[in-house]
Every structure is written in C-alpha cells, then in structure tokens.
Image 1 (cartoon, rainbow, N blue to C red):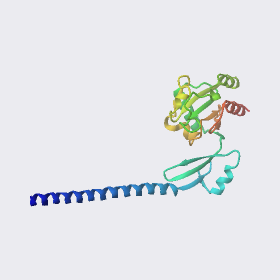
Image 2: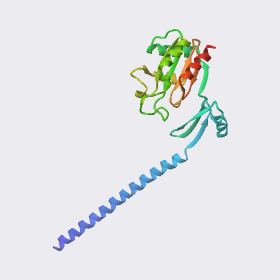
Image 3: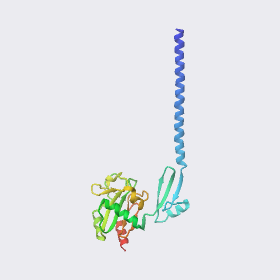
Length: 231
C-alpha cells in the first residue's frame, strides 16, 4: 500500500509539474500576443504622415495646407502600409493627349465598340467608396433619360462606361449600361491616377484635347465640358 501511495503521490507531483509548465507556456504565448498587438498599435500611431502635390511630388505640410485652401484643389488621404499619404488634386483638369496616347485610347475603345467620328466621353467607376457605396439603385442624374439627348444635340459622340473594380456596380444599372473593365489600367494611368470619390469622367475632342472631372460630378459637368471644348 505504501508503494501505491508513493506512486500516486509521484504521479500527482508529475501532473502538478506538467500543469505548471503548461500554464507558463500559455502565459508566455499570451504575453507575446500582447506584445505583437501593442507593437502594431504603436507602429500605426507613429506612422509617418507625408504630403504630396497634384504631380505626386513630396511637399511640406505648410505648402500642402496653403494649397489645399484654394478652391480649385481638393485632397485624398490614404492610410498605406508605410505611411499616411495626403495627396492634392484638381477636380477639373485639362490637357492634350500625345498621338501615341490618343491612338492607345482609341484602339482600346474600339475593342469595346467601334468608334464613330465625334467626341469620346468616358464615365469611370473606381470601385466602392463612402461616396458611391449606397446599396440601392442610383438616382444620380447621369442616368436621366434626357442626358443622352442633351449631349447628342451638342456633338456627335461615343460614350463609354468603364470600371476598375465592380464591387457595388450592380446598383448602377449594369443590365442597361455596358460597363467594361479597364483592362491593363489604360484609362486609370492616363486620366484617373488614384481613387477619386464617387465617379470620374473625361471628354476628349477629335484632336485629343480633354477635360476631366476627378471625383463627384453630374450631367451638367459633361455638358459644360463639351461646350468648352467646342469653343
């Protein structure tokens, strides 16, 4: 009996030792977990905040704040892996495509629908954001029935509906509108170089001159852009 008691006591001691070792490992794992979480929080708290002009060139905070107060400028803020980037942009931009760029645009659009003579109008959806993320059919006036009639009166045109990411696109009438993906990011690289809120657009005349709306706009903006390019 004494031997059995000694064996049971020994077994009990082993169990207590194993239990203590297990608890130590669990405690160490928990401490390690807390350390990693706190490190991530500290890293995010001390992440560098940088400022960029409309050409994506780094500028001082003072220059950024001064420019951002001008009515023709807005800015986007992106929380990136290594920094918080504040980037200025002009909602209304104008320019002229090079011959190579214009040929690239026309070749890409011809794959969607054969181009006819006239202006090119591109409506661009960057993907879901706070501005366009409502989960109901859109009431945006670009879908009004009189929109197409108004621009057709102004000029012969080719209209294209292009998207980068189709999340939430189902609320923008894909059963009626021929939305096409921006293959190889051609339009993004030429006109819509970052994610602007809601939608963007560009109107291009027969010579490659263009006017773009970067971010929120309506049908009246397109009409005004056509009229300005016709001058």
